[in-house]
Image (cartoon, rainbow over all chains, first blue to last red; front, side):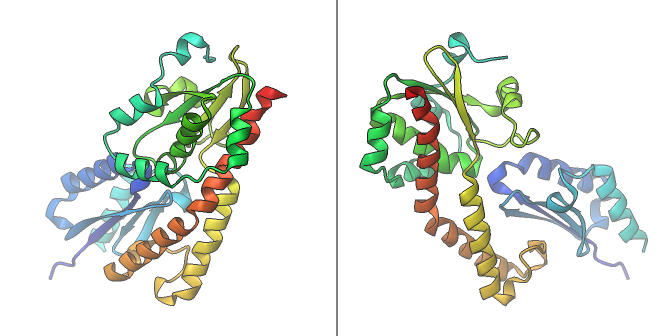
Length: 83
Length: 199
């Protein structure tokens, strides 16, 4: 049985983070295709840019500062896929 | 690059800025209407001996721009003593680099006040610290009153969608309830800077 792997990107809609959100989502879509069961985009506020993979927070703008490097998010997804 | 008359004149007037907005114009104009200008504050701006020039850095997607630029716009319109020119942040990085928040963040709006000879009187960034503080306090109170919202420091994506929507509603209500205080604080801080021209 194939496990369902989900990515959630929570971004500050008030801050204009849509381009970074879409860039990351596109990167994950192109690299992982149907290996991901969903990529959820959550418009939020307060300077948020959080990325979680299967419930694990792999990047938080508040915690880690700035936007994530795409390769680091992709690495986190690969780890989950191979688990 | 410093601001001189030639650069200042390249900025958009307040009305031209509004006309080119591609989003949030309705919210922007609603906020204009909600600004409550007291007689004493208005008199202080009207009493300025000479008009003050104000460079504004803005983008129409930014919540703090939508909240605070209308306050400056109303002050300019009703006092007749503030000459505003708006520059889009992402097309004017040389100006932005001079007014980074804490020396590193491109926070907007930025208001830079100049006398008639383009000597800087002072500048203002994003929102008053007092507003950030009261909203953080109120936010914590919301989380304390609603255990279903979890920790204020936890990522919101762990919340069920219907809980997340309720939290969003509570936060929007809180912002609405603190708007009057926020506008008064913006006016107080801008008045303090603009009236330096009279000193």
